[in-house]
Image (cartoon, rainbow, N blue to C red; front, side, top):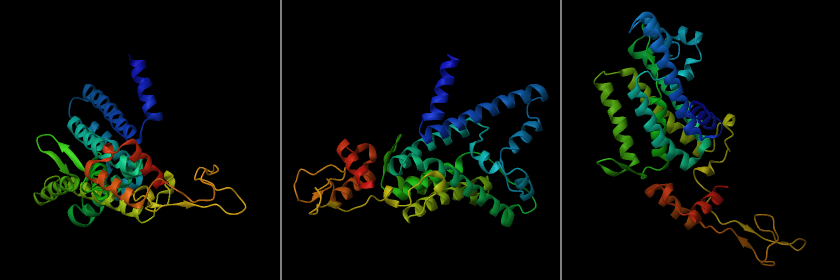
Length: 302
């Protein structure tokens, strides 16, 4: 049984989607930290400061000197969870909104968006704690919440009218879900409850907005093999013509001779068709597309 589980984990880490890999890494880190906590409880008793020191080495720390000595915490804090409900809630949100983002702009965007939103969330905590809240003390933060907020806002910016079917509430548009989530963080700030955490959440949300804004304006992250063109988010809306000349046979887009003689060859999609498909995605989600509509959208994106 354990060999089978280990093989499944290796398969997901090597060939799974970026979203599944991120979720699996979070779960693995949680399990490792759980066993470390059990070990500290056995050796020193429950609640010993040694476990806090261990998690602090993986958490984001707003103290500048500590941050310079432990630079890895800029990444590790995004994958660290100590409470089981903290992990479950973040993974559920990551799964729901990560799938939406992956469907709309592709699997390659998942990891950069996760890391970028988490980093912006940490930066927001650092700036706030240094300038306003705790200039003489440090804020320690961990968890995937800031990164998850990036996914929520990124999905909302791309498709604000995308419908999610919520338990008891029914279909709700993404833009209203995002408004409620951001509002809850603002209420937390007003009540001075977990101020650093709420600042991190809002920073992660800003990261998601900036990420989509940059992609739509033609920028990319070369380290993650992005194409510079924003066409993956906004497919090219034009009919492409390939015409023959006097010295060669007419070619189709696949490079094969055309059966139409000297006539022009058009791609099977038009501007109105692409507009209709995009509107359908915003309202009903990409899962509502037929196989022909998906094929047309892929051709337009290319």
